[in-house]
Length: 237
Image (spheres, rainbow, N blue to C red):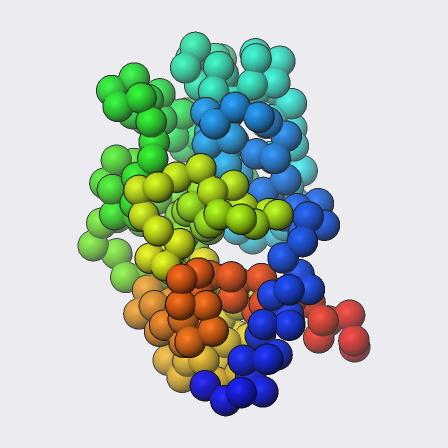
């Protein structure tokens, strides 16, 4: 990687990995809580919902969290089964290709895992296995870039960040893979971080490996850099 590209990416990461990032990102929801369990549950639900129109899914997540807070917070809501109140509208659309039944299934599975293991702290493959069959969770053999689970893991694993929580030790920050969505993929192509033609897991890994040249112990810090470079382009138009 050329020196000027390293400088560009590092400067963008410094500029955009700040507490103000939280305000317009789905990570704002787990930041409402103090307990580890509330943060985990809120973060997993928020990451699960984070696709499509940010304006729309943030509004839905805000409403869902308001309901969960009425029952003592996300963890209490899940563990006490209050999601069963949603059975009457299980077949109705929650958001895009999600039905309310999908959220009920997610909540049921999360409660089962907490009751069995006491935690949902797992790596990517373990999470996919544990939540197998839940709509929105890629199967174990999928070649998907798995953006939402990788974003969730970024939130949970990265330490010393004003944005991410650093609560989990099941993997190290060096093992994380960049959460690859369309915007990050396009910026990565434009900067020459990948030449691959589809945004799959091989592409996400390739981009992550490139970012290790700058941050060998914390490559997904580059997520903030690529996000920031894209935002800067939009605001400069």
